[in-house]
Image 1 (cartoon, rainbow, N blue to C red):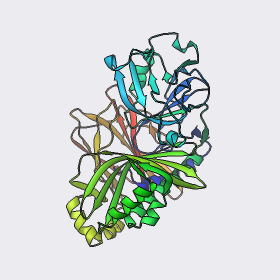
Image 2: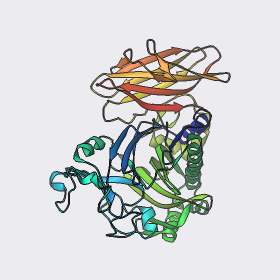
Image 3: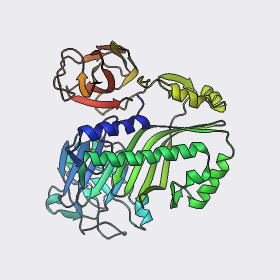
Image 4: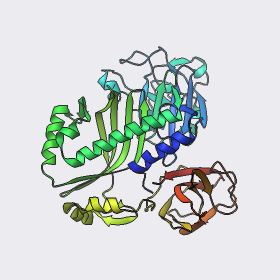
Length: 453
């Protein structure tokens, strides 16, 4: 299933109506959106590390920590302070990879401090890690590190299960700011619309519109703002068209600093690139400005899904785009059909494909296919609306509470392929789908929620 800009914006309206009053950490812009993933949040004032799922308003795990010997936000090398901001884990160190210069325990994760926001403020220093400690009394002092976030050895192993290098965000606050879900969703919508406008400006090949999204402080590799503008202007002049397809979008916030990461497929009349991109945005004077980007190359694609559930070769799409037919097909594509897209795997269960989702007046038909060697137990939950009422339907024998399964002994085993057929209530329409997987330890995992137009 494609996690698209359109779907995420639609979800905002659902969130405003149903989640008003509930509070979550300000940083959780992906709350109840997309595949399940995790966020690590360290709070220096309480010496706690919390692990959140994007589908839970409360932490799923909590650990004691110790931080820098000096209070406040890190500003320079050797100040013994723990930085405050949004970071990502770069490397996992264990065994002989861990230096013997200090008690780093048996497992450590390096971070990207100083990040682009820190560099903009001329902060210096390095070596800010999340790591364990052999000394069982290390945490007796709440400020007992040189700047790292430290947990006990027995806990760093448990924490590691929730970390995906380069992708799992690590927030460090003095005190975590909480906001109502409705306010978090409003901010998400605002930021997401900016990314959509940035995409449209790039596709327009109008350099002035495009560069207006970039801060004068922007840096990319060895290019500053002016050299980047010159480079893009030259590149744009070489192509008859440019099209971008963004997927697996995740958004994060630390006060006025924002991060967007996503997969980006770039297609022009002459070439195509498939990359993983991370963008650093700053909110200033009621606008968002890009200050930095990083990219990693993904495997080259021969085929993709530009419209609905139809798979198309990039070569064929290029021929359509040259004639301007791609935009016509995009406007005519089905709105309630989900195409094949491999979902992200959680660390404890095998993945599935959602081949297609079709809706008629009488029924909804979902085609599911597993891509692992073992059997997968699946529970789809269909979200319907009739008049002004929303309700849920699922497979026979499964009980639901507020749309979430409370029993799953009747979960359907998917080996290779399975078709789920759900009769509709007359006059109702499908507005969303949630997918749950039961792992080998009988734990229920919500891996996807998609709201349809």
